[in-house]
Image (cartoon, rainbow, N blue to C red; front, side):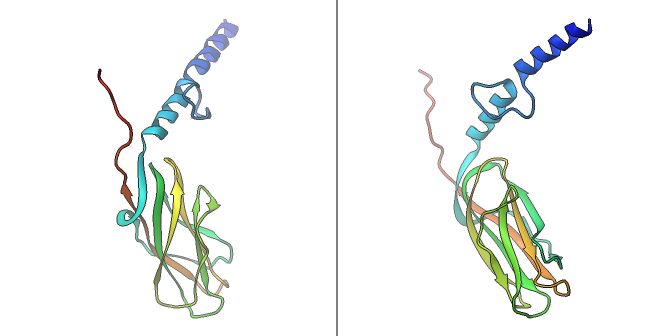
Length: 166
Protein backbone atom coordinates (compact mmCIF):
# COMPACT_ATOMS: atom_id res chain seq x y z
CA UNK A 1 0.00 0.00 0.00
CA UNK A 2 2.81 2.44 0.89
CA UNK A 3 4.56 1.69 -2.39
CA UNK A 4 1.32 2.43 -4.26
CA UNK A 5 0.95 5.83 -2.52
CA UNK A 6 4.57 6.65 -3.39
CA UNK A 7 3.84 5.85 -7.03
CA UNK A 8 0.72 8.04 -7.04
CA UNK A 9 2.56 10.97 -5.41
CA UNK A 10 5.43 10.61 -7.89
CA UNK A 11 3.00 10.64 -10.81
CA UNK A 12 1.26 13.78 -9.45
CA UNK A 13 4.58 15.58 -9.02
CA UNK A 14 5.51 14.67 -12.59
CA UNK A 15 2.18 15.91 -13.98
CA UNK A 16 1.72 19.05 -11.87
CA UNK A 17 5.34 19.81 -11.05
CA UNK A 18 6.98 21.29 -8.03
CA UNK A 19 7.79 24.91 -7.19
CA UNK A 20 11.44 24.39 -8.16
CA UNK A 21 10.65 23.60 -11.81
CA UNK A 22 12.28 25.97 -14.28
CA UNK A 23 9.80 28.04 -16.32
CA UNK A 24 9.27 26.17 -19.57
CA UNK A 25 6.45 25.87 -22.09
CA UNK A 26 7.21 22.14 -22.42
CA UNK A 27 7.59 21.39 -18.69
CA UNK A 28 5.18 20.55 -15.89
CA UNK A 29 2.03 22.54 -15.13
CA UNK A 30 3.90 24.65 -12.54
CA UNK A 31 6.64 25.41 -15.08
CA UNK A 32 4.08 26.28 -17.77
CA UNK A 33 2.29 28.72 -15.44
CA UNK A 34 5.62 30.42 -14.60
CA UNK A 35 6.50 30.59 -18.30
CA UNK A 36 3.10 32.12 -19.15
CA UNK A 37 3.40 34.69 -16.33
CA UNK A 38 6.78 35.80 -17.70
CA UNK A 39 5.36 36.12 -21.22
CA UNK A 40 2.34 38.24 -20.25
CA UNK A 41 4.24 40.64 -17.97
CA UNK A 42 4.04 44.15 -19.38
CA UNK A 43 7.01 45.45 -21.31
CA UNK A 44 8.34 48.78 -20.09
CA UNK A 45 10.87 51.48 -20.93
CA UNK A 46 12.62 53.98 -18.63
CA UNK A 47 11.00 57.37 -18.03
CA UNK A 48 10.40 59.92 -15.28
CA UNK A 49 6.88 58.60 -14.58
CA UNK A 50 6.98 57.26 -11.04
CA UNK A 51 5.24 53.89 -10.58
CA UNK A 52 6.49 52.75 -7.15
CA UNK A 53 8.08 54.48 -4.17
CA UNK A 54 9.60 53.53 -0.84
CA UNK A 55 10.14 56.97 0.65
CA UNK A 56 10.92 56.28 4.31
CA UNK A 57 14.33 57.34 5.58
CA UNK A 58 16.73 54.53 6.54
CA UNK A 59 20.32 54.61 7.74
CA UNK A 60 23.20 52.27 8.44
CA UNK A 61 26.56 52.57 10.20
CA UNK A 62 27.79 49.30 8.66
CA UNK A 63 31.01 49.54 6.65
CA UNK A 64 29.79 46.66 4.44
CA UNK A 65 26.96 46.98 1.95
CA UNK A 66 23.62 46.45 3.73
CA UNK A 67 20.22 46.04 2.08
CA UNK A 68 18.08 49.09 2.91
CA UNK A 69 15.09 48.83 0.54
CA UNK A 70 13.49 46.31 -1.84
CA UNK A 71 10.71 46.42 -4.44
CA UNK A 72 9.54 43.32 -6.37
CA UNK A 73 8.89 44.00 -10.05
CA UNK A 74 6.22 42.40 -12.24
CA UNK A 75 7.27 43.95 -15.54
CA UNK A 76 9.94 43.24 -18.16
CA UNK A 77 12.31 45.87 -19.54
CA UNK A 78 14.48 48.81 -18.62
CA UNK A 79 13.48 51.08 -15.74
CA UNK A 80 14.85 54.13 -13.96
CA UNK A 81 15.68 53.63 -10.28
CA UNK A 82 16.36 56.75 -8.21
CA UNK A 83 17.08 57.45 -4.57
CA UNK A 84 18.48 60.17 -2.35
CA UNK A 85 21.57 59.74 -0.20
CA UNK A 86 23.61 61.69 2.35
CA UNK A 87 26.00 61.14 5.25
CA UNK A 88 25.51 62.13 8.89
CA UNK A 89 28.83 64.02 9.16
CA UNK A 90 30.61 65.58 6.20
CA UNK A 91 33.67 63.46 5.51
CA UNK A 92 35.84 62.00 2.79
CA UNK A 93 35.36 59.22 1.84
CA UNK A 94 31.59 59.49 2.01
CA UNK A 95 28.70 57.09 2.24
CA UNK A 96 28.04 54.78 -0.70
CA UNK A 97 24.92 53.30 -2.29
CA UNK A 98 24.35 50.84 -5.11
CA UNK A 99 21.30 49.29 -6.80
CA UNK A 100 21.12 45.49 -6.87
CA UNK A 101 18.79 43.03 -8.63
CA UNK A 102 18.24 39.74 -6.82
CA UNK A 103 21.32 40.32 -4.64
CA UNK A 104 23.68 41.18 -7.54
CA UNK A 105 25.08 44.71 -8.01
CA UNK A 106 23.86 46.20 -11.31
CA UNK A 107 23.85 49.98 -10.84
CA UNK A 108 26.73 52.40 -10.51
CA UNK A 109 28.25 52.95 -7.09
CA UNK A 110 27.19 56.39 -5.83
CA UNK A 111 28.94 58.37 -3.10
CA UNK A 112 28.04 61.35 -0.92
CA UNK A 113 30.30 63.47 1.28
CA UNK A 114 27.48 65.93 2.00
CA UNK A 115 25.06 66.18 4.93
CA UNK A 116 22.39 67.34 2.44
CA UNK A 117 20.39 64.84 0.40
CA UNK A 118 21.03 64.58 -3.33
CA UNK A 119 19.31 62.38 -5.92
CA UNK A 120 20.98 59.77 -8.13
CA UNK A 121 19.42 57.63 -10.87
CA UNK A 122 20.36 54.34 -12.54
CA UNK A 123 18.77 52.73 -15.59
CA UNK A 124 18.61 48.95 -15.17
CA UNK A 125 16.93 45.94 -16.82
CA UNK A 126 14.45 43.79 -14.88
CA UNK A 127 12.32 40.70 -15.49
CA UNK A 128 9.03 39.85 -13.85
CA UNK A 129 9.67 38.61 -10.31
CA UNK A 130 13.01 40.41 -9.88
CA UNK A 131 13.77 42.12 -6.57
CA UNK A 132 15.18 45.62 -7.10
CA UNK A 133 17.20 46.45 -4.00
CA UNK A 134 19.04 49.45 -2.59
CA UNK A 135 22.20 48.79 -0.60
CA UNK A 136 24.20 51.34 1.40
CA UNK A 137 27.38 51.47 3.46
CA UNK A 138 29.10 53.97 5.71
CA UNK A 139 32.81 54.87 5.56
CA UNK A 140 33.16 54.38 9.34
CA UNK A 141 31.05 52.99 12.18
CA UNK A 142 30.75 56.46 13.79
CA UNK A 143 29.10 57.94 10.67
CA UNK A 144 25.69 57.01 9.25
CA UNK A 145 24.80 56.56 5.57
CA UNK A 146 21.23 57.77 4.99
CA UNK A 147 18.87 56.90 2.10
CA UNK A 148 15.29 57.80 1.26
CA UNK A 149 12.89 58.25 -1.69
CA UNK A 150 13.72 54.95 -3.42
CA UNK A 151 11.64 55.19 -6.61
CA UNK A 152 10.90 53.12 -9.69
CA UNK A 153 10.04 55.01 -12.90
CA UNK A 154 8.95 53.69 -16.29
CA UNK A 155 6.39 53.83 -19.11
CA UNK A 156 4.40 50.83 -20.30
CA UNK A 157 5.12 50.05 -23.95
CA UNK A 158 2.38 49.46 -26.49
CA UNK A 159 1.25 45.84 -26.63
CA UNK A 160 2.96 43.62 -29.17
CA UNK A 161 1.42 40.70 -31.01
CA UNK A 162 -1.95 39.96 -32.48
CA UNK A 163 -4.89 37.63 -31.89
CA UNK A 164 -6.83 36.32 -34.87
CA UNK A 165 -10.32 34.91 -34.34
CA UNK A 166 -10.58 33.74 -37.94
